[in-house]
Length: 50
Image (cartoon, rainbow, N blue to C red; front, side):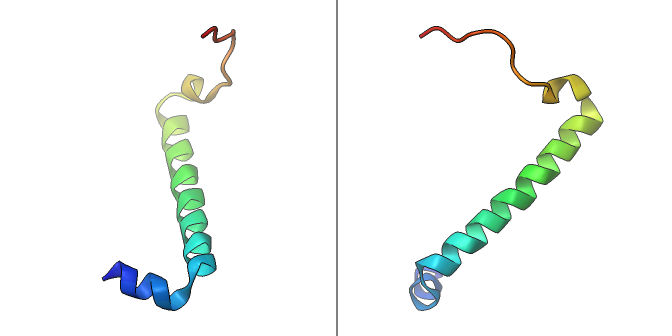
């Protein structure tokens, strides 16, 4: 059923909706991580050697 709506509203609007959802979810996850343990949000240190 989503395919039917996606075809009618177009790729651009679908992409805008996806970006908005990702932004909102990221903010919520970051807020939860800060509440649980502020040290988890710190930037990575060191090098990754593959």
